[in-house]
Image (cartoon, rainbow, N blue to C red; front, side, top):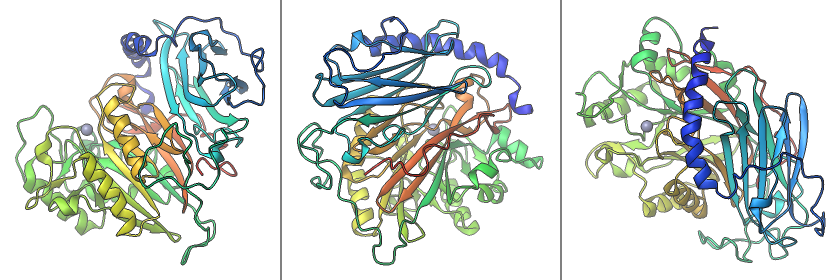
Length: 501
Ligand SMILES: [Zn+2]
């Protein structure tokens, strides 16, 4: 039970963070956060056709499921929140003209009991247009199942939402968008036509299951644990092993050589950690702000060691061209291209035409890489794994949102990120999931509960795109070892509820 030590101290930490964030949130969400009477809206508001486009959510807590429906409104400040048990407040705000299309959806969960309550715990924003097949599918077709935790064990709320009613007329099934053209909000069609299920060489209805985890730092505490014969992945190994491909961000350099650069934190792990890492992970991203901590030679040494042990990396290379080359993973006839980028300083970690380093996410280059992954490398799916965002911020910033959209417009099937040391909000844009930050995974040296909380992201892919995805929470102990929270994963996102297309 070592994993649960410190939970109680963690509570006050969370509350502090919550209060600080509460202000920022309140400001960013005005006028969404007005105190409102906590009553479930029963049915459509007066004068609204209940068959009109709206959002239907299922909110689960303490073995209860509460349905929450929200119709488009031009007056979001008038939308009532719904209290779920004594602990949580759930709110769904749908912007748009009543009876017309949905422009924007904002979903939020607040903790009603924490110090400084209500404390915002999660927020999801989704913008039109929505793919035709998202309409009238069961929850969580639109959002995926979202797990929200308050401080304390077993205080978990889960929600999933779907679109109900008739999609706007102009959005037709099977219409093809222009290449990379973002035509949000126009009558232009949104979802590409489904490719044939049995493409040459393909297996009908084949699926591949990916698991992504966030920052894995194998120096310091985790490094000492491994040196003692311990295994920081021990508590999550079984769960991760259920995925076909496990992908992690390796947030350190693994080398013997090199010299620490003059920067606040430098992480170098012993080469011996690699054989353990390879048991639990199939791919690492090295595109981050610590892989270059001991200079280019140490970085190049790590590339050699990864190659020697047979652990593929993405986001790094001996030169610029190699760093931007996608890593291709083929399973059951589905070809997945992974790309990885860093955009958190120092930029001198970047590869050059004649030296090793990481891939940096210049917009034009990213768009080009994604298109090339399909055209030149024949990928069915493309997923960029990002290292970005503001540390300790629970919401993605404008830059992350802009780049994620750019990548989806260029053809990315999902966008996954890490670095902020906390989990951030998620979005579905043009039917593609964007998970901005998975938070820390194996990392020590943090005391605040939200810094010790990370996600495992499970994603099921078909040849046509992401079919389902969900996150599961882990919490790190004092050694930086992640432990799954005791609640079982929600399974309902699996089966016959395609998330996209
Ligand atoms: Zn980082």
